[in-house]
Image (cartoon, rainbow, N blue to C red; front, side):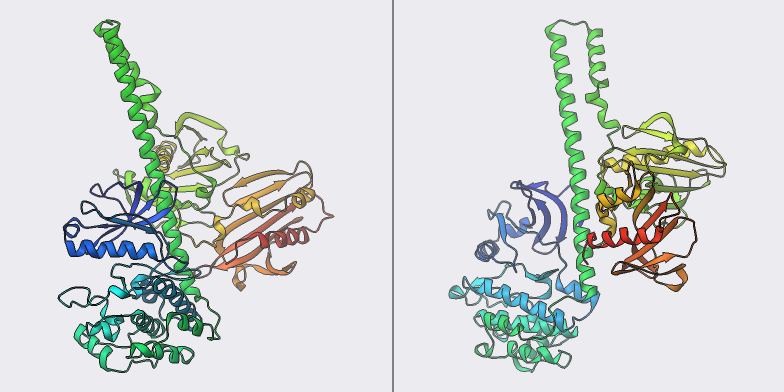
Amino acid sequence: MKPLTPRDPQRLGGIRLLTTIGRGGMGRVFLGRTPTGRLVAVKQIHRHLANDPEFQARFQREVDAGRLVTGAYTAAVVDSDTSPENPWLATEYIPAPDLATVLQECGPLPVGGLRLLAAGLAAALVEIHRPGLVHRDLKPGNILLTPEGARVIDFGIARAVETDGQLTATGTMIGSPAYMSPEQAEGRGVTPAADVFSVGAILAMAASGTSPFPGTSTPQILYRIMHSAPSLDQVPSALRELVEACLAKDPAQRPTARELLAATGTITAEPVWPEPVRTHIAAHRADSEWWVETTEKQLAYQDQLAHIRSRRRRVLRWAAVGAVAMLVPAVGGVALSHWAMASGHAVAMADPSLTITPAELRVLDTCKLIDMAVAGKFGARTGDLSQDSKGGCGTDITDAAKRKVTYTLRLGGSVTDRARYDDSTGRSAGWAPILGSEPTGDECGREVITQTGEPAVLEMTAKTPDGDPCDTAEQALTAVVRQLTVYVPLRQLPRESILRVDPCSLFDTAEARALSGDPGKRTATPHSCAVGGSDATITLSLVEKGRPDHSSSGHVKFQAGQYVAYRSTVDLPRRCFLDYLVRPTTGEQGEVLAADISVRSGDVDACAEAGQILAAAIPRLPKP
């Protein structure tokens, strides 16, 4: 996706546009939100095509066909405008990658994935053929993969069977050559069997990575479709007979959509996407969610700014009218105008308030934030962006005076445990007081506390070879806060990532307070939650760090109920650290649920208690 440009419309009908999904020869596709809150994909036709009578007829057919088709395996039409002045079509938005991209990124599908794909395509064809339509252009680019299965989109050249024939009077062939049926290639009329042929070609491509009718030119491909047997050597035997039936030259010999759907049920493999495909689908969904969240926050900011400006104009008009009506002297009028411009109505947005939700804090991309807000304003980044296990990030930036400054942005730290930051500097950023302490050598830190939801500490430290590190840290922190008031850069994490989870939601509250003793007070940061009292302090953390199951990690196996966890070999009296590997990520890293318990009395087995807390928390984690 890409941001809207100044030339793009802000609205189409009642739909507010958010981002650009893509552009092509026919038009542009935007992501939008309807007044009811529904996300839609909006196709706007290019103006030079909108006045073409033949294209108008084709676009009207697309709208009509989309309205006829309903079901769980297609994208429903939500709204449209077919007028020549500005034609557009809004369909249900499906946050999923297309099959062509998935095959390119992940390679051919195994039998289980092929079964799920075939079942989804067959079910979609049942819905498309029920009202008498033929899609005519099934291809990997028109098939989206969701966690539940395949969805068919784009009815641009769909037609009713009874009015079919050649789509144009000149006999032009319509469709994508590699997936055309022989009757389409010959320019003959098509029936629903043409779509079944396309499914066969798609399944062969998904199974092998190559077309069953390979060729180096369109004429060669079409000739092979009409006259050659398909190349199916790499199609698994469990699907080969079904694919061969779909690719029969004679339309009458192909299965119907219902027969195809029934046949997919006889394939013995479990219908599931392989892990690389599931990861790709989750990443695409996370990317879509990031764009929606980021863009809507920007739009809300723009709306707020427009509202403030509107109120300012009303105040100035009121001041002018009052000055004339009451015959206020010119000097008084100037004073009144000065008061209006200096009021909260005029200057509120000079330092917009910092509002960031707990959910945003948990997936805040501190590396992207420091790169945008600090490196973009205070110099050139000369060091790598280094992210720690708790989501903090640091880098080196060389400023205009050729000083190399090391900046580190951290998110977290208990708001109730701030011994280093007891003093207010008397200044603010985003309407939040900037707190700080005296520098330690050439390093100094400044912080603000977010006030939306669970308060959290946002800390910036700066290490400089000369100059005032505290002033440097404060300027950088102010730039970061201002960036956050415009939009919040979020990490693009899989939906099942534990870093999205509120760590306090994992506690069995009654059990934790019984173990900790009075007062059982809870403190939290975005990725950790602690319950502390007279008897113990229990902390659960959700982090990405080195895998505890590897021999070099300094951990040994520990049975936590029915789960295998790993105990740190660090020996501390009355304290125990347990790690549970939720899922590996990249290289030697993994997402880990960590339990840390510190007991006040020597009579309690800290590791046994930590294992009990961990075993109760694990079932509350998101399922992969």
